[in-house]
Length: 447
Image 1 (cartoon, helix red, strand yellow):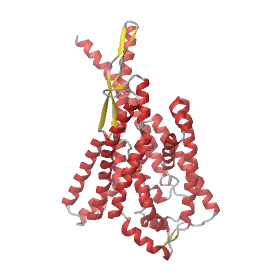
Image 2 (tube, rainbow, N blue to C red):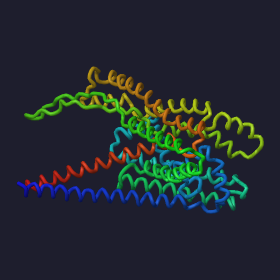
Image 3 (cartoon, one colour):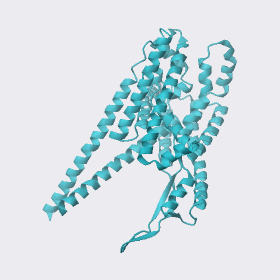
Image 4 (cartoon, one colour):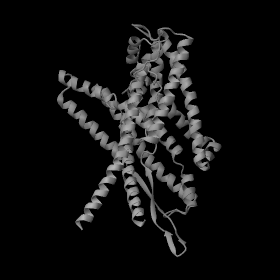
């Protein structure tokens, strides 16, 4: 008996070790790809005056460029070949999702095309990414030609050659980053696009934490205040994790069916509806729209724009009452809008009807769709309020207490969502590997 138990334990240990080696290979692959990506963020575009660029980047830190510089891990502030990062690809993916609602042809391609339809949509998304990268790259090349500082112009030799080289470099960098993200998704663990943005955000944490402790050492901030900031960040992180995993489960009953002498089905299942269905899209879009006027005013160097610069800085800068109010309204609007794009109650009710699923107390078809829309509308209100709290509280804290370092609400949402997704995928790999090993041993014993 002891020998049998010892053999079983040894076999399970060997299986676990062999599967863990495969998991470790995937993790090491992701780490190597992310290191390559970080190296690329330090390769600048040709013909850039780095001293002048650094001064201009600091002046634009409060605008939309500052927000995207955080997502790119400083690549935008250094004007590297990865300046556009994965953003054109994400924008193209969002546009394609919106097109599934607007265009019936694309909707049918996604719904009925199967694997071939999915590949066709991915191909269109890649082409759209290149087009957006070309337009954005040209806009960046033209925009930085007009920038200057006390060190001179940002571009050493402006002109057609600089624009052509910049566009080619930026488009090539975007395509390479897109390829890296796809490699992570297929050969590594996690979503490649999310991991690249996650890496850019996390790369700025060590310097921010070091600055916070340095100000505590010099006496600019008290030790108690630093402890309170740390506790507040941990509390917000716990709240985000709780809300991101929160679901409203709708009970679905499937009918019994007889195949030969056996009866299958008849079980009850749950249709999970996330509280935050829209994810991090609402705060990103809301911040981009609100910071756009400040960015335009920052680019304006003439005296005629000084009046509008004063208005924008007085009412639409971080922490101002009007900014917070508009931020809240835009988050709520994009939460409802993007949720309606991701989750279609009519389509879900139709799929349940086709597979014989019945929501208890509701008739299949229109009544089920209305019930799902009723639930989704109410949990979206909770989700919009949750995102607003996470994003607005840091804004108020920065304005009131002049915090030198903070993890913004959008960044915190991205970081927590990526970590949750990573843990879920690691657990899935471990469970699937354990089941595969058990099935393999069972087939071996039968032979």
